[in-house]
Image (tube, rainbow, N blue to C red):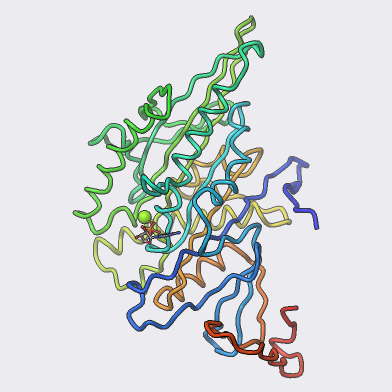
Length: 372
Ligand code: ADP
Ligand code: MG
């Protein structure tokens, strides 16, 4: 069936859906005190299932645009983002964000390591590759710049200018969102990018160990801006923006027992994440609803780059261990409103045994619809 990529709102404007990709990271014994195995598993390239805690003989099945299983490589994840990149060379906006509980692989997905680079370095390389492949004869000159900021406690902080104060978010007459005072550094190559990005990321990591794992409580936002100007009069100019975002952890901080200052932080984080979930919901719903961009800093910043004519991908990271069970459930429910209860025992298939018959649903009630 063809994928619906855009829906119309009441005013007949095209509103882009947010593409939802789920990535399950590999099982890590160290994360699982009781060695209980996985509570979630992939079914195919779009579907996964998780044990139903209300009834362990059932699973809950979810469907996404793309499901990436435990063996997925960084390059494969990047391929689900790559198609949106050409748009930023023609004055359109795009955003990619990694969502999910702390420990589920957001930073691995976005940043990665030197040997396994993530979406950010791959996307930056690709943008340079596309710009360098442009033919001068087409008549445009390209320039690329980067900004890097953090949203922490509903404050916007410039990571390329450490020690700076909370920056305001404004909208110009053409409805472009901008942050006056934010550093925009022109970059001419990937190594140029690397030179600015690595120390700024390290600053953030160092601060995080001092202030209660700040990196899991703040949103790290990398902005890549591509401006192209026509050689000949009237020298038309187009600016495209790409936001690459490592979101704060989506775990429920009430349950993890945070108090005092951390509870205040949690409230602020929850405001941005909670608003993001409402925005994504509104964009992906087929009925006309107000999109509440203005209710948090994160969504206000993304207003011109999420929904509307912008192109967006949300990568929901999940972990297979039982310890993450409720956070995984929460993340999946955020990522997909459609789920199906399947009456089927969740069997860890580690030995070759003859296939067991699928347990039949009781008179088609509650779990009546089968997986097949
Ligand atoms: P988050 O940023 O969501 O808190 P991390 O990216 O820091 O999570 O991942 C938690 C741990 O799991 C890290 O040690 C990371 O290296 C590892 N990890 C995450 N995803 C993968 C993956 N796909 N393959 C291998 N290791 C992974
Ligand atoms: Mg992280």
